[in-house]
Structures are given as structure tokens and as C-alpha cells.
Image (cartoon, rainbow, N blue to C red; front, side):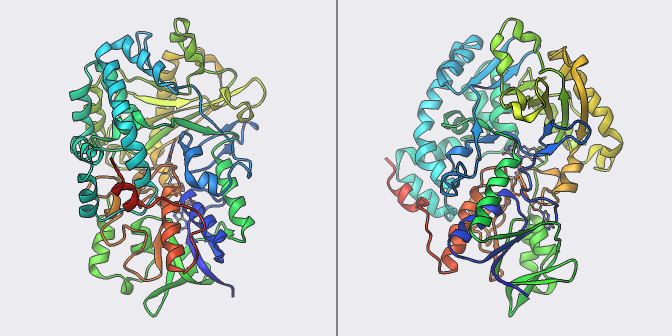
Length: 534
Ligand SMILES: Cc1cc2nc3c(=O)[nH]c(=O)nc-3n(C[C@H](O)[C@H](O)[C@H](O)COP(=O)(O)OP(=O)(O)OC[C@H]3O[C@@H](n4cnc5c(N)ncnc54)[C@H](O)[C@@H]3O)c2cc1C
């Protein structure tokens, strides 16, 4: 039997990032995953009916990945991982042929906003300028450090003008932010959709800074050349190069405890793997309730793990298509730049649609279609056979359709056809260009990645105070848990879901320190960063 310093549960990108740092720190590591391939939400599938067409069953738009500290530290470029950041980063296509456009060049975005409202264009410029230092000096360092205790954080922020401004704007909800600061209906809708709806509950106070922070963020949406799975391949290569081991198709049955300390994992096959510590990339219910022996979990810890909540608005329905030609937007007749739009949004016209989307999720029904997607092969021809294309359209839809997620099995195909019909109204050539299509519902997401409970791709909501020090819950918010030798590193921890790798990046620092290993990289120090604010 082999003994490891650390055994990781799951090979999501956060676990792989943490494993790579710790393998480089000299620790003997093993990651196990129930799936057949490592990478979790980083996956590229080749269409089995149409060889050469690549699809993304999970993540595709990776924000600011090439600026992440681990991308550099773990030498992703040397491992052959390359990213593209198309210039027309997002285009919201309106039925009347107009389009609201977000460019990598902020001046072009301001010009697009000005076509709708000169006042909104001025507000965009003002908020981008004002929030740039807040993003660079506060929000980026905070996301790259274990979180501070909330009272300490507030005290540090209150000492500076930048910190006080962040606290002031944060107290609003995203809805309040757009209604106070922007006037045009389509601009408000676009800002909420692009920057808000996909991340946080728009009605939640405490998130007023989310939209200006994204407006001021230096990096936009990026895509991995060759498909998202290539990032997983690069991370796996780095882990293995430094002696780390990865075993797939290996399902854990329980976390083994010795003298009250996590000391390994027993697999479903009965095999036991011993380790000095266990690092879970899974969600709190899986980690504390499914995998720890009940006798090791106090009533208080059980209650906290059970109470960890998931996003109502995060599940996705996806239509994936193999195409004879790319979508040709009707609106591109007057706006040729749309032929090169990276992320496109269709069906979103009015601010008021948000209330219906939220109500539909609460009621388990399908709302009027608002969807977004991309045609990856337009930018990366390796993702489809020569002259052909691959594309997808995503829609936020409730997990419990008509009260029960199993209803998706009967409704999936028909809804996929409906989505294609809606898409074709904006790009009429699609009616004759589809060579193959398949749909995936929020239920497929959960079946494949059960840590995304209820299909929540963010692996836990930011509501109920589940942020920072309190993510997933107080007492487990700094990657250490109440069980000695057991750590967390997945999207259920700070700074949360999506492909950022920062949960794993931050966890690695804490685990290395506890293991008495040098932190060989140079993470920021949040106390110093906040104390130095102007
Ligand atoms: C349809 C869809 C689209 C998305 N689009 C984007 C996007 O464009 N941009 C973006 O940033 N994010 C996107 N996401 C979200 C993103 O994929 C996740 O937030 C991210 O992958 C979470 O990373 P993680 O490290 O927590 O682990 P995950 O990527 O969730 O991986 C968890 C791993 O744990 C394994 N696992 C689960 N349960 C067990 C178990 N019991 N035992 C052993 N192993 C287990 C899984 O097999 C998996 O490998 C999308 C997700 C989905 C589903």
C-alpha cells in the first residue's frame, strides 16, 4: 500500500491547481476522481457521430485566465496551453437589428453605449475609471488570498477612500446599481445579463460592486485553443511532471479517520489509500455528510454542511450544433463586425425580462428565451473539420422543471428544437446548416458533476452570506475545516465557482504552510495590500 502526503478528492481545475503547486513544493500527492477523465468542468468532447467537431459540455468562456497567477507559476504556456481573447468580446443582438457591443477596447464599448444613450456612455466611462483602482488594488488581491475575517476586512477597508467607496457601492444590489446609474432599457438589461444574472442574485444587497467591477476588469472573456479540455491537459501535465499522481474512474466511499484526523480515503472497491491529509474539491454535503463517517461529524458541523445553499439561477440548458457554415446574423447586413462576435446574446430586449426569468425559476417553468453562446471554430479552426463549424447556445433554465428535475429527460429534445428555432430567427442560415445537434439539460450537469448540486455550475450560491470567510460556512472558510487534516479547495470555497483556479491557488498556500513546506511562489498578502490603500 502506498502512502501519500496528500490525497485529493476530485480533479476539477481547482484541485489540479492546488495539487500542482503542492507537488512542486515537494509533497507526494494523489488525486482521485469518479469520472473517466480529469478536469471536471474543463472538458472538450469530440462528437461521436461527426468526427472532428469539438463541443464543450461545461465551461467555455474563461475570464482573464491568462492573467491568473497560477497560469504563469505553473507554466501553462510551456505546457502548450494557449488562449484567445476576441476583440468584439460580447454582442447583444436586438430584434430590431441593433446591437449593444462590449469590446476589448473600452473606447469602442463606450461608442456602442452612446448609440443607445449618451448619458449611459458617460456613466460607463465614469464607473470604469472609478472602479479600475478598486479592482486592481482590492478585488484582485482579495480573490488571490485566503479571506479575511469580515470585521477585520471592514476595518481595513474603512481606513482608505477606495475601501470606503467599495463598501458604499457594495451595499447596493446589482438591480439598484443599474436602475440608479443607467437609463436605457436595453443597456440596463445588457449590463445585468452580462455582468450580473449569471453570477449573483440581482436582488441581493451586498453585490452592487459586481457590475462596475466587471466593467473595470482589465480582462475579458477568453477561450482555450483546442478546447477547454486543453487547460485540463496542461494542468495534468504539470502535476505529473512534478511527481503528482492522478487516478480516474476511482470513486471514493469514505474519508478514513485515524485518531480524529483525516488519514486517507477508502474507495468503493474497498481499497484504502492512506495519507497525512485529505483535500476535497467536492461540495460540503459530499465532503462532510456523504464521505465522512457520521460519528466524526458533530451536529453543528452537520447542520452547517446541510445548510449550504445552491443557486436557483445557475443551471444551464445547452444546445450544441455541428454546422456546415457559421451562424450568419441577419443584423450583420448593417453591422458587419457582428460576423466576428465572440459571445452573442439573443432574446434579451428589455430590463423587465429579468423579473420573469427569476419568477420562472422559482416556479419551475421555462421563461421566454434569453440565451447566449459562441461559435468557437470561427476563432479556432482546430475545433471543426476544414470549412465546417461548431457552435452552442446556452439558456438559464430551472433545474426542477415543473417541480421535478427528472422531467428534463422527457422535455430535453423538444426544448432543444425550440432553442434552435429561436436562434434561427437571428441567424436564418442555421435552418439549413445544422449537420448534427444535441441538447443537455441541468440534470445532465448534475449527473456528470454531482458536486454541482441542482445543476448549480457555481457549486454554491453567494446568498445566505456564503462568501469570503463564510464560504462554504463559518469555520471552514479558510480552506481548513473543523476536522483536522481535512481541507477544501473546490468552487464551494472563496472566491467561488467558475473557472478561475483561485480556490485551488489559495488552498495550496494554506496547505503548504500547515505541511511545513515552503510557499515557493509569491502570492499577495491581503493585510499588506489593504493597509497600503490610498
Ligand atoms: C454547462 C456549463 C457551462 C459552464 N460554463 C462556464 C463558463 O463558460 N465559464 C466558467 O468560468 N465556468 C463555467 N462553468 C462553471 C465551471 O465549469 C465550474 O464552476 C468549475 O468547473 C468548478 O470547478 P471545481 O474546481 O470546483 O470542480 P469541477 O470542475 O466541478 O470538478 C469537480 C470534479 O469532482 C469530481 N467529482 C464529483 N463528485 C465526485 C465524487 N463523489 N467522487 C469523486 N469525484 C467526484 C467530478 O467528476 C469532477 O471531475 C460551466 C459549467 C457548466 C456545467
